[in-house]
Amino acid sequence: MSENLLLDSEIGREWWRSAVIYQIYPRSFADGDGDGMGDLKGITQRMGELQELGIDAIWFSPFFKSPQKDAGYDVSDYKDIDPLFGTLADFDVMLAKATSMGIRVIVDLVPNHSSDQHPLFQAALAAGKGSEEREMYMFREGTGIKGELPPNNWESVFGGPAWTQIEDGQWYLHIFDSSQPDFNWDNPKVIEEFESVLRFWLDRGVAGFRIDVAHGMAKEAGLPDVVENNSTMTGVSEELKDYQHPFWGQPGVHEINRRFRKVLDEYQDRAMCGEAWLSTIPKMAQWVRPGEYHQTFNFGYLACPWDKAELRKVVDESIKEFGGVGAPSTWVLSNHDTIRHATRMAYDEIPKQGDGIGPDYPQPDEALGQRLARAASAFMLGLPGGAYIYQGEELGLPEHTTLEGKYRQDPTYFRTKGERVGRDGCRVPIPWEADAPAMGFNTTGEAWLPQPNSYKIYARASQRGVAGSTLELYKRLIKVRKDHQMGHGSLEWADEYAGKNSLAYINNGVLVLANFTGSAISLPKGELLATTQHDLTIEEVLEHDQVAWIKL
Ligand code: NOJ
Image (cartoon, rainbow, N blue to C red; front, side, top):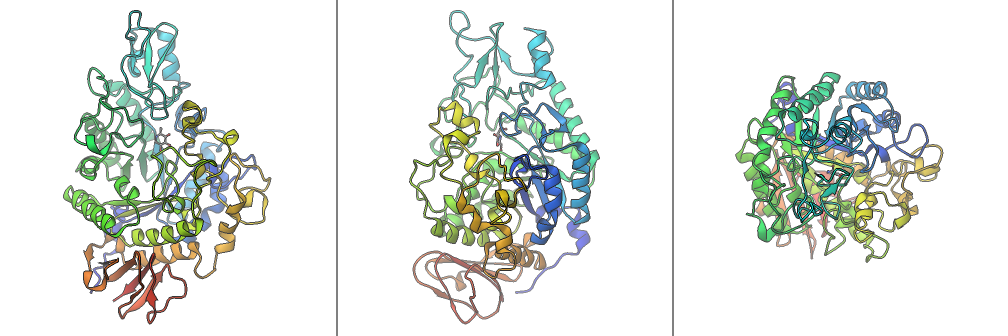
């Protein structure tokens, strides 16, 4: 099989088509000032480690000014940095360092809602009923005899009603926490406000945006009741997949996508990726039609178990549907809203998105999770398109599944009175050095969420240079992927190399062979480029739950 390599200049403009993008959750990556909360200085200090990993870009979860009621997804000033994370000057230093290392920077835009402390919401409260200021958000009169009931039956993703009543009797909508009022995207002033936010960050030099709740901004006219309440970001259940939900995936959102895209197109080589949790891949693909987003997260892939038939199906469908509108597929296994895949994969039955795992739940088989997560990552990183990795997954980091209630900060935990423990377990500060204070997260030992002792064995310093470690595996996979331009390649299933329980595909001359269950399989002749099976040689056999990359 021959390789079809592109020139660097051909890749440049559309770098996002093949990029490996690393998600930093700023609270938990590295803490430069030792207060227990990660920050921009800490990130800048550790940037070299990301260059070593070989990533192309970083997506930062929000570090904007915010009361932190939803860990920064409640923004009170879109054009400034929260003092917890530093200053705009610290951002510029971080950006310059990343750029000097060939790493692009993507920031998180949160346009569905602001913080209730945002000056626009405060002005809306102060201005009163019927004012222009109220028109920036979703205020309505209530129902019931005296308006004492919410305007409709919508539920918050974090639990409880999606409406809160204020003193003058009106109610405001918040699909998330009551501290996160939804903007009124039918109001042209809201679009103008966000176009200015986009330009602010583009002028500062960012390579693009991840757009939060990209599927939630437009609401159905008249705000009708939801037929089946299902308060997660994934929208409706599989049985209702043809149902048009009144606030997820409304057609009106595409006009907003196009307005955002026009702004990005005024600049060179910028991209935006939508967070659009929709129940089918064909629906997700509508977000990346020409003139809309460049990419969207492939949550169908994230939700797919380590299963031969299901993986093949989701890969085929993704390539067909995203390719059908001229977009690359993305691939992702973990992020700050989901149970880390090194833990998730050890369960047969996975809690609903956003629910999390607490100390009272059945605990996972850690070794099984490690094995499956390494295999799943090696399978994913060989696929053509863009790949997203979440900080810590390159260490094999599992979820913190025994975090006590007293430490929990996710609004889901509070709004459901602990019934759903929420997402804190995947947001714990990552370990850098096994025996340093806070495992090297800082020098003081403070941490906004306590790290479990078990994280020590995953410390980056303990894995660096150690053959067979998950960190070295990721580095190797990313390097081979880049050397062979697999992100830009195309996938062909290669059943002639696969046994009954394995999958094989070829991408740009590299065979990716994944063995799922049962007996070991023999490897074809060729050069062994990367493998999850430590110390494997081409003469040996590939065991179950292992993946090998071979140059044919
Ligand atoms: C999606 C974000 O990823 C999540 O963390 C946040 O809670 C909600 N949107 C609300 O902004």
